[in-house]
Amino acid sequence: MSGPSGTFDARERVLVIGLGRSGRASCAVLRARGATVFATDEREPEALADTIDEIGRLGVPFVPPQRLAELLPSVSTAVLSPGIPLNNELVRRIQAARIPVYSEIEAAYRICRAPIVAVSGTKGKTTTTALIGALFRSAGKTTRVGGNIGNALIGETFVAEADDWVIAEVSSFQLEAIRSFKPRISALLNVTPDHLDRYHSMDEYAEAKFRIFANQGPGDTFVGNLDDPIVAELAEGDPSKRIPARALWYGFAARRMTALYVVRGRIVFAPPTGDPRPVDIMPVEDVALPGRHNLSNVLAAVLVGLAAGLDPEALRAGVRSFKPLDHRLQGVAEQNGVSFVDDSKSTNPSSVIAALESFDRPVVLIVGGKSKRTDFRAMGDAIKHRAKAVVLMGEAADEIAQFIEPSKSARADSMEDAVTIARGLAVSGDVVLLSPGCASFDMFASAEARGEAFTEAVRATVAAARG
Image (cartoon, rainbow, N blue to C red; front, side, top):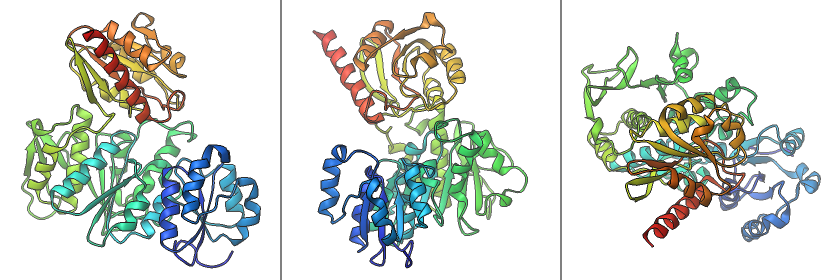
């Protein structure tokens, strides 16, 4: 079909591909903007009955994939949900019909009137995104937070005013299908092995992450982590050859290019322009989030705030008052000196390593789930040195077991079983830590559902011990 593409308004006939959270939000927003909208999904219509009813009430008909041939000649634009790869057969059919396919965050960007801060990274991006939102609110800014953090970005950009700020967590999946998405400030926290069931190599995965700054220009800012080897490579030579925006770097040590760093227990800002005298931001001990990895997240968030011109006092107040998010090193209970900690959002080995490094107490680790074809060798080394015992569960149990001493490990068939075994292995002063290092979809609908199952099992265990 000839005609407008990428306006996402009444001139468009849009096909939304995938009816997860962002797909449903895309249907609602695009209809509100006057577009004619259709939706498709490869799941069986019976499994989508409630969703089909929901979008039907919006005036969005559901079209099964096998009936798309009748519709495609009249479609001007397609919006792709992040869980569906670009090389999916259905997506290829739509592209073969010469219909441009945009990611949901691309559509969100094109309708947005407010400046966007975009955050990506293998681990820590949800905490950092939420913290940045808190810092901007602390500075008095009207702030809307969305994206991979749990609520669709398009729903936030649709209601954002020109003087608001939109803070977006963006995944590599979401970045794959961008075209003009251009955040005012982008932040890349780290790039470590993950999603290798979707990407053929680490290089391909890293390139997807690097798209976060691809469309930025001299008036924009990129914030990068010099402590991460892959991100730090972007700083080598002439960064402008790869990063078209102003680049600001953070890390734990003061180096030639580091704008924000830690020295003598304090976070310090070295302005790259203007008055060169270092600015004391705050003492590290005021950071309420546990672990060195979370201190790195704080550095990223503070540097984003400084790049946006926020007052350092507001940044200090925001950091001091910020609390851990659900399912991210979240304390659940304590019983007879044993602490139970939910880190269910840990879905890759590097997150498990960071979680283990957050404790100076013996850890009984519950690990496993659905593998994403990542290498568990480094995680096994961290477990060897930092965990007193391991409870394995899920599809990846055998794969992980190859890198763990048999005498340190036990097997569980359910979360209830895992918690019972772990509690039996722990003594006063220990931590029972759920940090799976894998996806949840072999046993649970989501990482949140997995964390809730852990919490319920812990509470049952504690209640039984009290009699």
